[in-house]
Image (cartoon, rainbow, N blue to C red; front, side):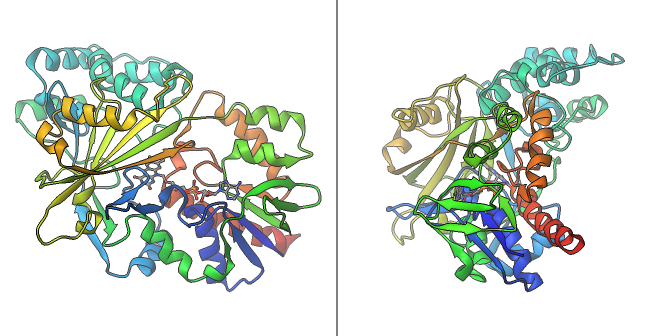
Amino acid sequence: MKILILGAGPCGLGAAYHLNKLGYSDWALFDKSDHVGGLSASFRDDKGFTWDIGGHVLFSHYDYFDKAVEESLGDSYFEHQRESWIRILQRWVPYPFQNNVRYLPDDVLQECINGLRSLQGTQVHTANFYDWMHSVFGSGIVKYFMEPYNRKVWGVPLQSMSKEWIAERVSLVDISRIERNISEQRDDLSWGPNAVFRFPEHGGTGAIYQGIARKFSDRIHLDHEMVTVDVIQKEVCFSNGRIERYDYLLNTSPLDLFVDSCTSLPFEIKEASEKLVHNSGLIVGLGFKGERVDPKCWMYFPESSSPFYRVTNFHNYSPNNVPESVSERYFSLMCETTYSEHKPVSEATVVEATLQGLIETGMISNKERDGLVSSYLINIPYSYPVPELGRDRALGSIQPYLESKDIYSRGRFGGWKYEEGNMDHSFMQGVQAVDSMVERYRTK
Ligand SMILES: Cc1cc2nc3c(=O)[nH]c(=O)nc-3n(C[C@H](O)[C@H](O)[C@H](O)COP(=O)(O)OP(=O)(O)OC[C@H]3O[C@@H](n4cnc5c(N)ncnc54)[C@H](O)[C@@H]3O)c2cc1C
């Protein structure tokens, strides 16, 4: 049984890692780029700053993934306590916003609490993300945080998004806890699965995947872009003319593009893939001379005073993320901006707009701006798979069809599920796809 893997991101590498562990030999992995890691890769710029493709925080729901990370990094990592904050109304509010509204000016705090109280006892059926947030957070929190922030991140009308993906990805509301936090003047920071996270000492997040790939690098073929897949003949054709046959195929490239590349697919499958929506991102890495003493890990920016929705104090994650020097200190800020057909952002002006936004939001002073020594721009055409209302129906026809042809499409954009689109999910989807292929082959 020959297994081909398309993509050397966490999902493809998860499959490869598992095949290697199983002692399986008839498999090969191909990626169009010249490095492994996919969206979880890292880069070092010519000034000596290291950048991820947006703030990547490693957290895991799976022991198997943890083990792979441990094997890759050994003890060459730092452990950080998560600290995330929201910049709003010229002040910092700890995340999650609703639990820490006591930081807001009195009139805004009152609006948020009134909005929450007016919901008590009401049960409303909601059909989309926008209605859902109103029914859960109330008008005040929606007005100041939920709506502007989510519009910035997703870059699509929030009414077009479903609410089914939310579960673990959005912190929910507990009114008595919020009122207690206000009366006891208490910070409430504990939410979510990633309170403590690890970060590689050297090489950014991408170092994890370079370490994993090292064990089977002879089977990884970089600079191989899949251009067509013949699902009947079971053949993949690459842009350099190479053709590979497979018994089972794991695709981790964006599902809509993959479907486009497949020959002889039924019209309904092609039509369904057109329903899949994604946004795009511009990651601006800015390296400065100087010292920044600020323990925050990452910060959210819901307001229109900046193009970015999130900034990471990337120098805090590892001292090796900035240039080494005995005489000079450096700091680095990684800023993420979404663009889409509903929310155009110019690549030509985003660096300048980002610098302006950092000044406007009080993140840096004009003097600090003068210490800018590096700017590094990464354009990611596929950033977030958007959980739109038609997504599950589309996936419900595409995935079973592909599986009937022995093709598994998994990972952040291969599976197109934001709620299962983090590194740990993607890695494990590769592992599970392999188990399923092996099982199906055995019972054929
Ligand atoms: C801004 C941002 C922030 C994020 N933050 C976090 C975070 O904090 N924590 C977390 O766990 N996750 C985070 N993620 C998600 C993380 O990046 C993904 O979970 C992970 O990279 C997905 O792995 P994957 O293998 O499914 O896909 P990818 O990483 O996208 O890899 C797919 C691979 O397929 C290759 N490919 C594509 N087309 C072709 C083709 N035609 N032929 C051959 N190869 C092809 C690509 O080159 C790529 O290497 C973030 C993502 C983004 C965009």
